[in-house]
Image (cartoon, rainbow over all chains, first blue to last red; front, side):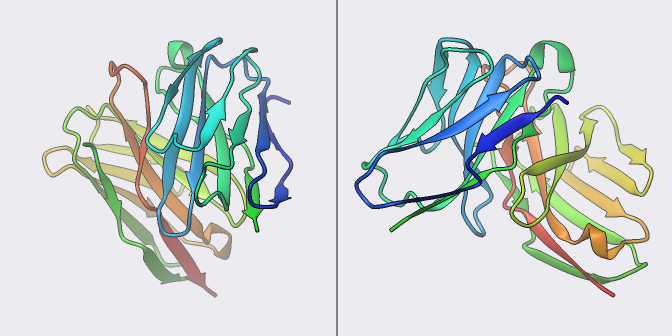
Length: 115
Length: 113
């Protein structure tokens, strides 16, 4: 079964701690994305990667970091520098080279709560 | 920059048609999408339309695109309680450097039994 997995579904951390959210895909997609969702604000792009070993900042990258060492994996670290880290985080992937329509496929999300 | 806007809330009765509207600003948009999000879940792609099309129909879903007015709509026929969710429209500009999707804020569809 092809798809995107995110773990864990719920994550709780104390303020001041870094935390890493996992995103894995077995769709053989080149591009991967991280979004943050807050109530009433839609999705905001944090980071994206179009190919292994390359990534770019999105619209709200401050306080976050990523790596893309493997095609299947795109972990997101929420650092202590992120002022309001509590949110729902969504990972997505796409294969612009073959899909023809550039749609993105989403994982189930991780809800991070920082207290 | 590019912007996508949607109304926040729509309430319909079961069996009626729902129409969710979206406006966008990027005249270079090439693909426009509708996604559905159920509570606590990720986004599920419902359908998409290429910018040279006016209409696309897929079972109960009809997408209308007015490129002149930069207006996109999603019509759900015979709306069911299982259609209750947040619906996002999104657009992308093929040929741009990133293939980024720009999302609207989402429309919460509430279906009353």
